[in-house]
Amino acid sequence: MEEMNSQAGQRPKADLVKRSQTAIYENRKIRELVIENNDLKCALAEHQEALEFIMAKYRMQMTAFMTLKKEQSEELPNNNEKILQHYVEKMGDLIAVSDEGIRRDEDYDLQNERELARLRYENKYLKECLKIGRDFGSIESGEKQTES
Image 1 (cartoon, one colour):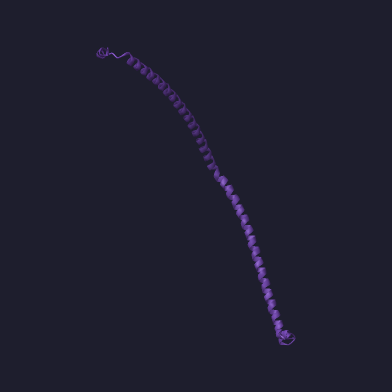
Image 2: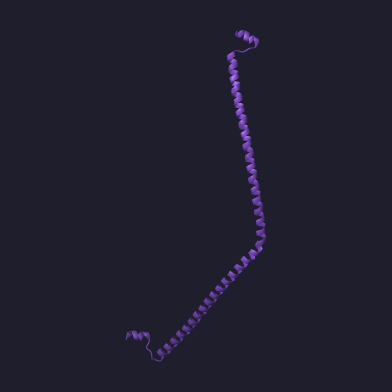
């Protein structure tokens, strides 16, 4: 029977059943893949729409930011002038304080120099008086005083 089937080009029933079951399984897998492929296409389309929405918002925000930045850059010179004026005033105050400190320091140094000059003159005068007193005997010299 098998020889006759093979000569006639017919296959045994078990082989046909096996092949039909394989075809049914393959068809089911193909249908599942087609469904999954359609789901992936839908997900991709949704993703692209979401990305386009996000990019549109981003472009809108960047345009607003650039516009604001241009407006602020135009306003900056006025603001900078105010800031510079404030710093100039502060520097003027600091210069006045440092000048006052320098003036007081110079006055103190001058006063010290005058006091030192006065003391030197007084010291010189006292030494001369002491020398005159020793020379004329009204004051004993230091060596004689220690001996007594």
